[in-house]
Length: 142
Image (cartoon, rainbow, N blue to C red):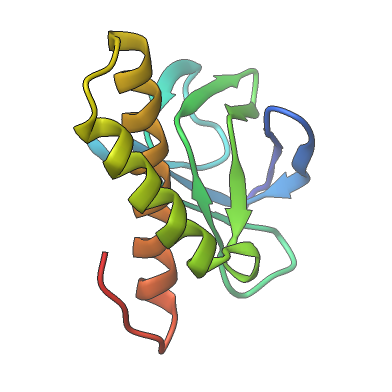
C-alpha cells in the first residue's frame, strides 16, 4: 500500500508524526477512512475511536480522540484534537471519576457555557471508557 504523511496534534503536544497507509476517524456521520491519494477535504471529528496503520506495522494503532478537525491536502493529513490517548494511556478510574463529575455538573443549574463544558467532558470520559472496554478484558459500567 502507498503511504501518506500524517500529523496528529493535541492541544498541548504532538501525538504522532510520520507515515501512514490507512486512517479511520470518527465523524458525525460515522467512521471515515482515508488512504493515500484521498481527495482534499476539511471535516469535523467527534469524540470516538481513531485508528491508523503505519507502513511497517501489521496492526492498527487505536486511540481515544476528542473532538477536532481533520484536513487532507496535497496528500498530507493533519488532525487537530483537544486530546488523543493510546489504549495503554487510558486511565479507566480517572475516566469514571470525570464522567461522574460531569454528570453532577450537568444536573446543576448552570449557564449555557458551563453546561456545554460539562457535556464535552462527559462525552470525552464516556468515549475513553467505551474504547477501553472494547479492547480490554476488564468489564465495567458507565
